[in-house]
Length: 533
Image 1 (cartoon, rainbow, N blue to C red):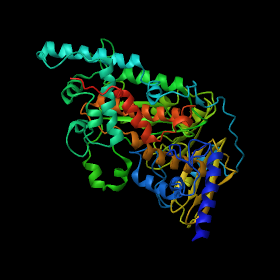
Image 2 (cartoon, rainbow, N blue to C red; image 1 turned 60 degrees about the horizontal axis):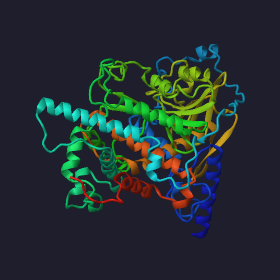
Image 3 (cartoon, rainbow, N blue to C red; image 1 turned 180 degrees about the vertical axis):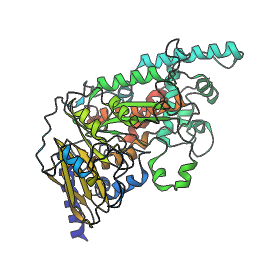
């Protein structure tokens, strides 16, 4: 038993070493404790569960293949096709591929050094509070705007539908408390924010005293970011939330510089990922579908979400998908929007099948953006790629076996591990080998690009799980409010990341849960617990 434990630890440390070489932290949101190392992003104790995200990468690829692109956007290996089947639309026959420059002769590929240093853009003092970090993204002037717009909407509403005797204008202190109450649903995992004032299991008298339920419901009724439709751009379906999203994006850009490796994906945002992985497909189909899609660009060294892109699934405006959903280049357009601020920096981005395409990667390479993406014959645009690499051979393949073709600096990789997986990359040399380290089967050989992608995929799986810790459970009916509270969840995540990288972290060493609880208490200003009416 002891020998098995030592072997497991040896594999774990080997995997961690390789993760560090790939610029990945294996437990960026690891809970703080006495066993935390000097690196604030993961624990190195033997009983740490961080190896759970690095042990079964091949299985995770298969899980994402089944799940498809709907969740994280990183799903789907290349679908199985018989050797006699035709290749996907736009793919090239063997003679066409040779004429187009595809060859089995491999050459070394090197990515130039990153042109920026990553980390927080400003130094926070050691006595900085959880609220200080949160207000890097939602500052006082932003909260004051919520106060102004909410009061304006309440006044106009009452002018049209009659006075509301129980209403009086909201203040900035009340608006902070309002944000604190709703945010508490992520910390205490309650389905309804109103349960705070109930006598049931999710009641929370310690914070309920700060504001009466009647007052909270009045603020909830009139809460607005933008009270009235602007005279210009009136077709913008997200007009009620767009100024906040613009402000949030600017704060993301100003407070943090991401690492060289980043991921484009669509995170799980509907439910706790534990529910997603345990419920049946029938239960999933019963869930009410969101009316918007959200993609992110995320730093893989810290988990900081650098940019978000929100689009309505229905709508005629420029922010709606209705005008784009029938075009095959939809996800390419999303990728271009997410990457518009990183050109010329030698960034390496990882993409899922819906984004991966030869033409997009070539376009990015001209902007000094290097790519590594999982390719699917069902989900991906396979235009310009050799058919011979996209269909399964009648000859049985061995686990870890790979085949590579190149055109210029672009490599198309077919790798076998309980199924064929294809990758397209110009970020990793096809001549360099990597390893997938698994607890049960040990080491599986693969090209370095496959190891790098699998490592980042594992990271995203872990991030989905950790992100759910701050998922605000309050579920409003209005789409703009759903987007708002989702954005607040992302802001809290980013605030926690900056906290762990600051001088304030060694002082209190708050865990993720403790940070969330402190933020709620500071938003509610619980040093003064006298109730308001």
